[in-house]
Image (cartoon, rainbow, N blue to C red; front, side, top):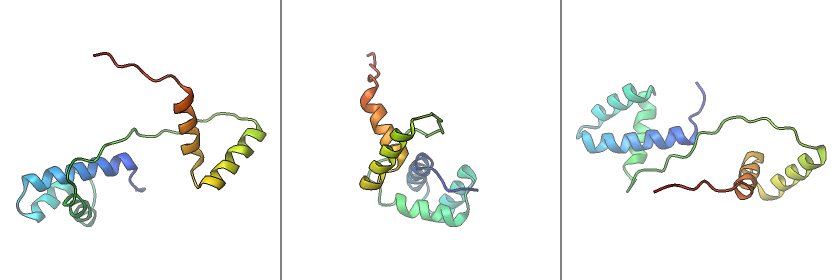
Length: 109
């Protein structure tokens, strides 16, 4: 099993926060967390410990998916140069550029 993604961590922290409010006895919360999340008791204790310090739920971001595109060599070189200069991942740079370039969704209501 691989590492949890950022959205999975946020969901687990929020679940742990809720369980801490429901259970007075920590081992009961751990058992429930293990059952609901499919994680080890050790991991459950860690999430519950972290959740004790949360004043409010953690926002859950979008899950990321792989998306393959073809770019010119020169553009890839420039992208990698920016990544090296800024310590940002290629995905983060491309995500920011696309957010800036694409029109924002309008919500009705």
